Length: 600
Image 1 (cartoon, one colour):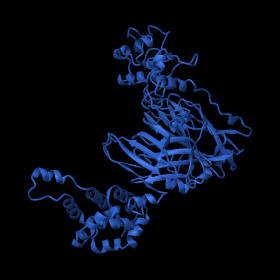
Image 2: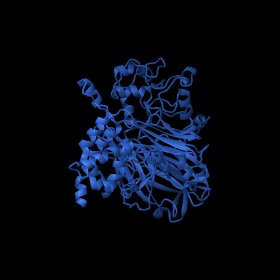
Image 3: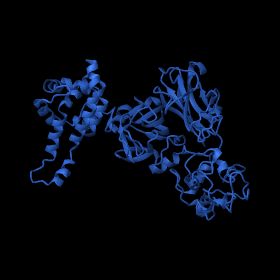
Image 4: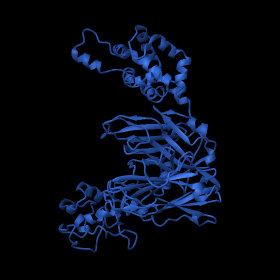
């Protein structure tokens, strides 16, 4: 039942592909600007290759075939029946003989049908036809949603006292490049005053539909320096502006908050915000400009509840290159929710966030140890199409003791170097942004993990991993426990390897889980390297690199004198986790040599 509830609460879900979907492609097929909308009289389907009439979103069957032909009207594409309804693409688009070119008039300009959607639209066989969409299983499901989409309806904007502010990009030239992220800061205190307000709604102001892909309104920390005018930015406006307040995509009429909630602006809320626009200029035109933005609605008549943004996910991970699929799992444990949840947490909106290597993402809720529902579930994730899961009609209520599992699946198949968690475009993220109320029912707006799913708000997870202190205090613990002093007494910095150092390190690595497996990888990259004392520890550990590696390898795979060379080679490749991780440790340790000596 929880699964059905989740799908029912998903008001509208949009996906687009950033490779194409703009009106210029209408000229690449016959009658590209004249394909009728199934349920809106006198409305044309602007993006024939997409499920969304505005021309963005997942490609339908025709869109996939069109892309496969290089976005050209070829004889193969014309004669093909992309949607499987018994008519060729040429017949549906008025070019039955497949003779049309971009400089000619189509054979027929009336009686057109859609080459990517089964016709007749509402025939029983077409309604049951499976569609290639991440949300809708059948054409009937898809039609039900697309025919509901329309004008922005938000009763709250008509309430007494509601004001609006235009948050719009200064008119700016669009660079002659395929992808641009452009941002601009807004000082809310200067624009709306220093009182307390609730942000309750937003609707788009679209200037140049040819390039506008999506817009995001970020909340900023008070420390953010406000610079004037637009500037090219990354995945977010800045490290201090990362709270997702509003996300707009093509096909959405606007964003309307739950009628009992608002996001606090002003004196006790966000004083600074930033708007980000994503431009896609597939033909690298140099004569376009854009000044799109959002009209935000706010009120001094505060609603019953403040809305907050709860962030889940992983704050530290490393993705190896050349992998078709690698998944990062982050668990907001029941211990963590018991620590931070002080009352019912009502979810009204959820957004997934990864970068370009992201391909799938979900946020699952467990209750009493069993699956309860998904707050998000994107089997096809595209960064440039932020999917907005809305629960304003029927909120999802979370409670202390629930678990939230955020799963992010990435592909690094086309990357030659390691990808790190971080802010840059080629870095990666794994965050879920949950809008909830009342804001006061969470002590902490973050429920994040690091490394091998170690919770930052539930110390039990560190205990479970066998390394009780997984923080910067670990270095202090290594000193107070005497381990650091033993290292200093027995081991040199980097070299040479002393016999007493080797005899000390081998049992240490074998018995102490802090020095094993994925946990050790996390400690190296996140804790030891961040302090002078930690780097000293790494340098002393590295002094017996070859010797310790050889001893651990032998103890893991002792080879008798009767083994054949083939057996020796086979066993030689079967090193334990401790060996592999300790060996990789030394590579990092040496990289800090100059840092250590510069700090001495």
